[in-house]
Image (tube, rainbow, N blue to C red; front, side, top):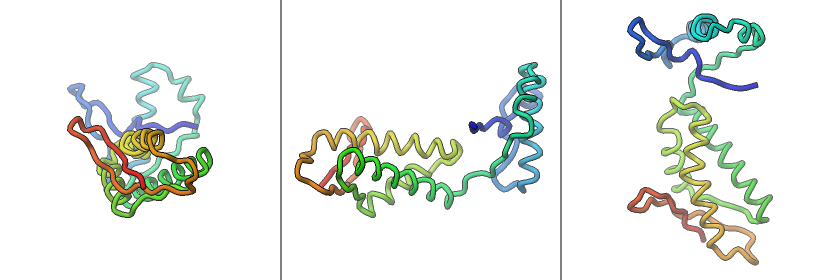
Length: 163
């Protein structure tokens, strides 16, 4: 199984990329347009209808990610990060509520890249700085750490402060 945004955008008569469906469109309209665009892509753009035939009817068209759903995706991803830190370092990771709000706002401000986009933002804004902070922080004898701040330096490189 894989996900794709194929069918969300199509080319207009001038070869420009235009949005095929909008967030407010009814699901049946979104599904019809997306399925049609997928069929056109494999049949006419790639000239490979056999690939589409291998996929068959196994296409599930999802709706757009709303800010509420984006927040839920973010929360689940953050829980997974805390679980990984606990499993790998035997340390409970807590993120201060204000840091969590700031991070959520940054990660879900642009939902056009879907759930994967939320994950990509979370990795660059939090996971990578957290990794650097955990290497630099004295962890021996600790059972827990708390992320108390999330800052960007003059080069826009994120840093995490731990206590």
